[in-house]
Amino acid sequence: MRPFDYLRPDDVATAVRAVADDPDARFLAGGTNLVDHLKLGVARPGLLVDVRGLPLHDVEVADVGGGTVLRVGANVRNSDLAAHPVVRREFPAVARALVSAASAQIRHQATTGGNLLQRTRCVYFQDVSTPCNKREPGSGCSAVEGFARYNAVLGASPECVTVHPSDLAVALAAVDASVVTDGPAGERRLPVAELHRLPGDAPEKDTVLEHGELITAVELPASPVAQRSTYYKARDRASYAFALASVAAGLELDGDVVRDVRIVWGGVAHKPWRALRAEEALRGERFSEEAVLAAADAELEQAETSPGTAFKVPMVRGATALVLGRLAGGGR
Image (cartoon, rainbow, N blue to C red; front, top):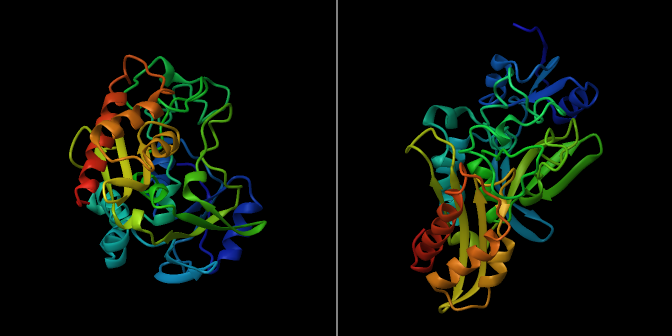
């Protein structure tokens, strides 16, 4: 057991200041990821700042910049958010992604903000006896020549080939959600699609957040695309398994012509992968399975696979056609 200090502040400012002032400090929310890393020796913080008591538990309709959004506090439990009637009605992709994640027990504990900041489940990252650039920069990447089933096929680098594990992040990116943060520089908003980063030559950095910057809320703007959305997850078993590949999508049709579309892939990159090429190829075109497959192919031209990951390309291609076909038929 490695000793550490513990602080449970009553307000956001105190929490932010405590972490910002200590390079060895970490925020603790639901703990479903961080506590595992404490046990494995992956995380060794000198101070844990418990944010569960902060007043960030509300789900409410708010006016932001002249538009209406559903504002979700960072401490809202995954199970509560999945069951919320507005989420189920206006953002079905988000509700479906939440119930696809982990187990019921973990969803009762995990939080909205914490879910977005969970770290990779790469077996080498979690094994402190193996080299891992994400855990120990400069040590090497064991996954490049190792077990590859969960490796990335898009946006990877020689430094890191792991994928981001959050189902919720994929769905939130597909409904144009934003995160609200509070940090040493004050409050800011940024799209969920821009929260996470590709590994490049700094795979130890999962997100663009600064040290001490705390997610306080997630804002979901209502839209026709969000209302007609869904989430599909391909995995090894029906429960408590991370995505081999997943698709969150939203679709707006004008007759049989695609007026607007969102396609985000999970399980294939270091971050939720917004398929911008595929979206652009579909907008303004007559909807058909052939058009969807051609659009997916255009996006997947940049994929790089190994014998262990080659299956992901046809998997995500077929899942995209399945999901958008269901949405075009009026399903969710």
